[in-house]
Length: 102
Image 1 (cartoon, helix red, strand yellow):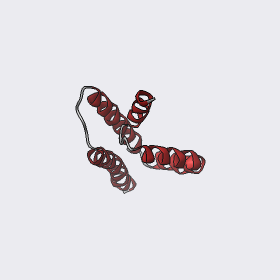
Image 2 (cartoon, rainbow, N blue to C red):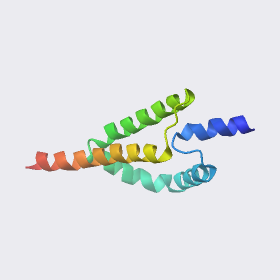
Image 3 (cartoon, one colour):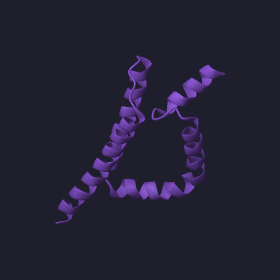
């Protein structure tokens, strides 16, 4: 059903390419267990990573709402915003972690 596919693709909020959606799900399922340890360590040592992830989720939600009203945000823009938020969170965590150790 084309309508179900359209809704399913919009859930991801980044792309409408079925290959990317399918492959990202397969990789997520395959590596979820091994990445859990890495992510739990990263969250505990990078204090600004959680707020950065919250901003990413807020952006994706806003993007989905905007697309519902006919405003299109390109994949490149979405990826740039996500990378900026996550990079900023990691960078801020590393920068302020060094300041706290002095």
